[in-house]
Amino acid sequence: MIHETASAGFSATGAADAYERGRPPYPAAVVDRLIDVGRIGPGAHVVDLAAGTGRLTRMLIPSGARVVAIEPVAAMRDALRVACPGVDVLDGAAESIPLPDGWSDAVTVGQAFHWFAGPAALAEIARVLRPGGTLALVWNAQRGLAPWIDRVLTIVHAANDDGAPQYDTGAWRAVFSGATAFGELAEHHVVSDWEVDVDTVLNRFASVSYVAALPDERRADLLAAIRALLDTDPATAGRARFPMPTRTDLFWCTKRS
Image (cartoon, rainbow, N blue to C red):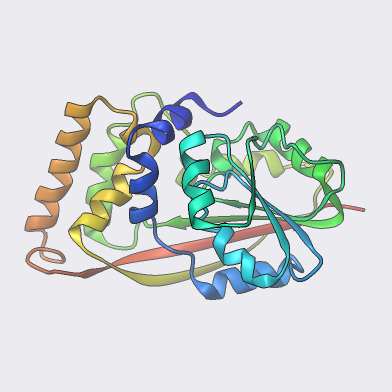
């Protein structure tokens, strides 16, 4: 049930490598908060849905919990197995999780819930969570934090020809309205400066699904436009490294007993 644009983009040649090199890390303080609210620790079972290359998965492993990563794209699963040796990596999607009823104490989702078929995914997550278990959603977002980032995002969003879902619209929240299986969403936000160079920024946006799915020439033109902006913007021009402010958003709720 993976979205067509996500499947095409994240399966594209080099997309997993760009994702690994270009996506910002999750701040330790946010992961610590997630682990605390999710009561994740030794003996707990955690499902990391749409785990990608394991950017969040690897930060859950030190908790001592048993972490199972679910990822529908084969190229991402291959990268995940390299990044997180010893973690169970399964082919599956949010709407079809290959685990028994009530198996998990917590379900985590990094950078992906907006892609899910909301009602079907929430019902399936409720199925694998035990009563009182936690669903935690995390996103790194950058809109509105620096003028140069907003200008880059204008270039990137113009390539979203098919209207692929995006976190910033907030449309993903609608499924939680009246969701009887879960309590209210709580949230926590942290802004940090992520030190980057030009290549990191280019990989960051090359790893966007609908950019990765573009024809080669159009993708090259888009990345060239971003490079030209970085070469001329006062905040980034001539600097080997520069801050890319990033807001990390954590949301969580618990399954009702």
